[in-house]
Image 1: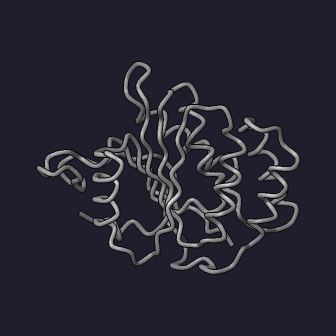
Image 2: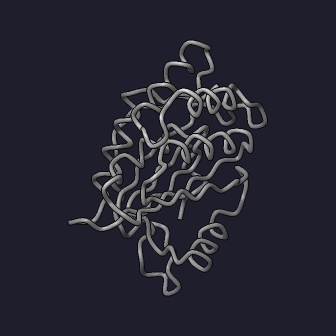
Image 3: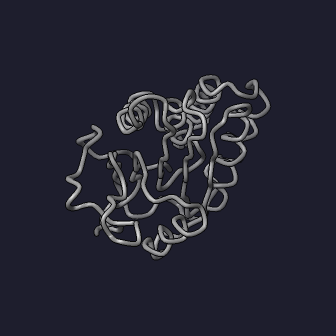
Length: 208
């Protein structure tokens, strides 16, 4: 079952002096704004499907491609109706939207978001919503459960069809070396800083 957020449930900022570093000269903060989203328990069915594939089938078969709002509504309704517990819900989803919006650069610049623990993709869609008009935006989403990640790929690709936003799904084990993952993003994709980071798991893994 998808775990709940712990209070407080508001976007929070972290002083840049305490942020992890990603640039080669170790001077560039990793993010501008961080939304801390805690797991209530250490593990949440790391290998099960929890209805994720059914949610992906439902969204892709019943919602028009490119309709993020419709995809979120269909996702939430089915997760509730079937008792999957995979949905964030409106309140938590809006917190993600708010955090991403606050982190965006002034003007029309693109956003670059890191989401850790994307589950089946509803939180990913929430993060994308504020960036719909920001062409060239990128969201990198990690997930340890390969079944959830596969469903997220299907749902996000369907709901964002036609948008100039890149979704980068990454299967990343809970005990993976996070610094090596960040270095890979810098070297292979040129990502040196995120506008917002969404920590959807135990944030002690990411201590600088």
